[in-house]
Length: 317
Image (tube, rainbow, N blue to C red; front, side, top):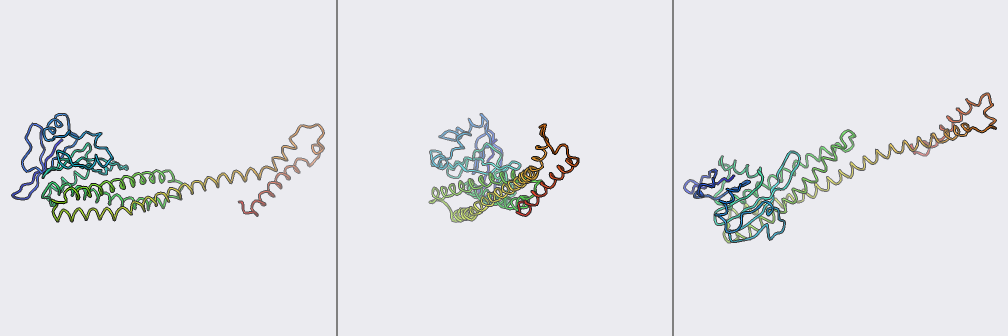
């Protein structure tokens, strides 16, 4: 699917329309958004590019030379966007090509931030005058979303901290902490990638960037710098809660093992007495005693009691 964002120069109003490969590119287009293109759409897009149209596997490169470069078609940027699916968050790469006043974006997923920007454009809730404004606004919205995810992580960790000593929620707590660790890693990766992208934009468009765009860029960079320490704090908090949860679980297991160990020692003397008088030797004088049975039972109880009180006195129980 291909959609175009058109800027009416007379009214400075934006509109979004669907583009068909059978049609020519509309005039005054500043943003061409390509989502999961089919073969026909790819063939049409190839007429707009000197280089090859980005493939899905090429959008996962991590080296800087592939993610940020200037080529025959213009400035190429690969940017990582967080995508929330149920309780999981994963990073989705989105490819941008900027040439003159046209931004062409490629994506293989329905990224929520793109939907949000298109909503703002339709309802005239955002000020956009050029293709670069769109690119900067997408990065700004991304950082806002990452900030929201961090706030959600703080709230979740407050809940898990109250459940660490709750035996009925141990498994759920550990699973949630593992999810939060993965989420925090995704947030950290997206923040570093966005910072690299914004610095590349600032350097590449240094001679043409407007003052208002420069202010937006610096504000987003400052927001990233202010958010990054929170990811370190969250990571430390997650690790602390994981260690505390595992430590509490081990302590509970040790208490159970301790009970079994003490029980085995307490019943060791009675077992020994029962074993002695359970022998089938012919000459055992005590077998003929009239009070042999109650005496042996009493010896078993007394030996167990002595062992028990000895453990209590030592503080082992």
